[in-house]
Every structure is written in structure tokens, then in C-alpha cells.
Image (tube, rainbow, N blue to C red; front, side, top):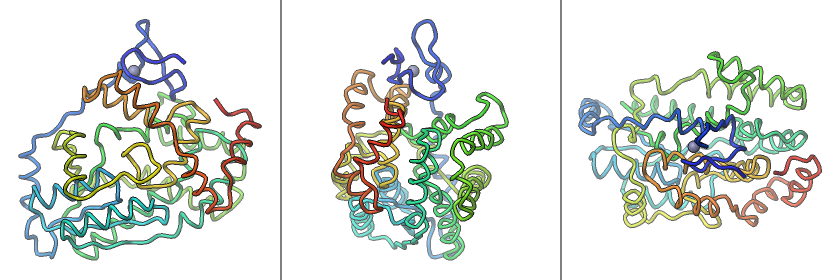
Length: 356
Ligand SMILES: [Zn+2]
């Protein structure tokens, strides 16, 4: 398979185009992340300290790598009085739950969990609908309900505890824009500025192939609700939602050392990489991207690391083989919980001719 000569993206990556030198459009259009100065962060948050409420800020912890570090940094470096919270969608990995427990106990911080059972109830419908016409462009819909639950959860916490601001760990180089890149698969008219309209038209095209997406009114409502929270409810516009990695350089070695040694953080069993190890659906989606496109979001993540000069291309090529080799026992157990079988799923994908 052809790969970009600068990063590791292959010819099956969404909307990829190579120039005469074999360099992809993602490399050619990439702008190195502009990190604001750390002092600006201190200046910004100082006004929130001791702000007539019990807590200076809230940090969402998922049991994943980034949020554990954000909680660590907020408590130890910024000396903030934080409230940690977890939005549990019912599909957290066991390892992620242990990481949350350790982070809270070791840092000695208050913690609340908000449970949503929506994904547990809807996942069977989402997956059986997708299986009917397996399209990589529609894999995002396996997570229908997650964004809305998380954003509603944050809003509840902020209101209930009168939290002055939230500190989050999104936007680190491994994660930049990965969601939007894979959304490109669904765009009806790529390159057109009205992206939301293009997405809706792309969705309509997929629905013509597989009307199950709109035949169940509950599921359709959930999809529209998720669309609203994902694309129209822009929490980043709110000034009191601050991304730590907009202000400090992403240093994977430092972050991993700190969370492993000081918070007892561990990568969940049977998952080969640390990024997004907190959610079972994320793992399944990676597997299905691999089966249908021959790549996963890890390809995009590691390519961003190369562009940010945080990783060498040859090291990324070695790592991607390991990262994309997903554990069958893990996937099998997860699918069995919902009455699906991994072998049956593989057979359907082969029969429909979508396996790369
Ligand atoms: Zn490239």
C-alpha cells in the first residue's frame, strides 16, 4: 500500500491526495500547533482562584492518559482546588475505572461520577444498524449519545457546584482533529465551506443505502440530538473551558513517566496503545476502520506526532503495526456482552466485500 513519504498515511486514508514527491495533502496543509505561553495560563486561571465557590475548577477524568495528567498538573503544578468528575457511559474499560480510582485517591481530590445508561441501551441498535450496510463513513454513529452525555454532564457539574472553569486535555498532537478527519468520509461535497450541510447531505446519502438509520424514531432522535451537541453546541466558545495543551508542550515521555510513577496509571490490559484506552466502543471502531479502510485513527495520530516533530517516521511505522493489531479476545468479550459475535461480524464484512 502506498504511504506518504513524510508521514505514515496510506492511500486509503480519507480524502488523501499525494503530490509529485509523494507527500500527502495532510502534510502539505499542516500548521504546527502554536502553543500559547504557560504564563498566560497562570494569568488566566489566577482570576478564578478562590472564586466564592468550594472549587477553583473541574477536571473530567476518564481513566485515560491525558485526563489523568491534566488532573495531576492542575493539583500539583497549578495548586488548584479541583473537583474531578467522570461521565460514565457504561462502556468504560475495567482498566480505566482503576485508573480513575487511583488518580482520585493518590491526588486526594473530590470526585463525582455521573452515569448515563443511554449508550448501553442504544449500542445494540447502533451496531446492528451499521452491520446492515457496513460503511466506514457511518462508524462515528456507533458513538451516538456519547458527546451529548459528556457535554450535558459537564454542564450539570458546572451548575451544581458553581465551578468557575473547567480544565481539559483535548487537542494534544496525537488527538488533533482526528474526529474531523474521519468525518470527511461523510461529507457529501468535500471542500465546500458549509460543512454541516455537507455532512447532513452525506448522511442522507448513506440513509438511502440503509434506511434503518431513520426507521427507529428513538434512534433518529438520538442521532439528531448528537448532531446538535457535536456540531452546533460549541463548548469551546465558552471562555471558561480551557485546554491545558494549548498552553504547555505535549511531552509524551514526561507525561507517561509522571502518571505511571506518581498516579499508578496503567494501560488497560489487552489494549496496545495508551491513547483513548478508556472506551470499549473506541476500540471496536478502530477495528472496524482497520477492516474497512486498512487504517485506524492511530495512523492519523502518529502522523501528527511526526509533523509536530515529536516522533520519527521510522519509529511511527514500527509502532503502527503494534497499535493496529487489536486484541481479538478484548473485542470478542465486548461484543458478546451485547449478543454479537466477532467471528459472525467478520463473516458479514467479508460477505459484503468491505474487508480491505
Ligand atoms: Zn503525509
